[in-house]
Image (cartoon, rainbow, N blue to C red; front, side, top):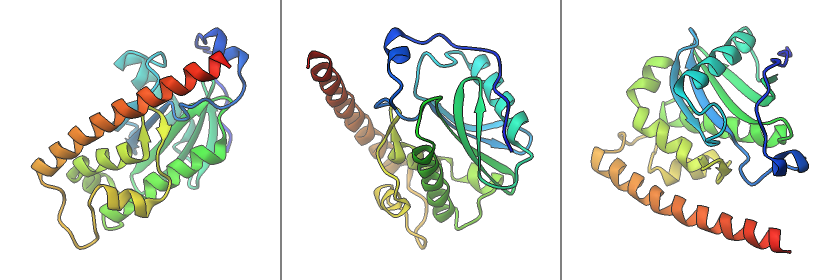
Length: 204
């Protein structure tokens, strides 16, 4: 099933237009919707892409309308974005990249997200279980993607990093808070390193 590209176009910088290669920031957004198209989780990593909540929800609704009838993994092109998605019972998982992004890489992120959540939810990948474990869901997303950069694509590594095991209880509030603090520090280091790489790349 192929979704048609919406005529709406978004402004791109001169650098983005000049380069057709995937950027360091591979993932533009990740979101999870229920079977009514309502948002359960969303993270946008490109601040220029749908900067307002209204624009984000309109985009998500448009994507949902073009994809919700699929019963298998699919790839769609909507509003100039490459979107890979997967459905499970009453949930729809989406990973969004630019028009030039590698679809296999986006699909690897999607599969890692789904398999990681399947483990922490004891294979009950449905709306009620997801809502009951939102702290863990956010931590999984943050271990896979940081600022749009793909950090991990192995579900087992993701599970280990967020301290989940099949026979363990969900993280306590204290451990969640500590993990978030650690992630903020890690994000700062990653962004600084990325800026240095970009600077030296431009100077070459």
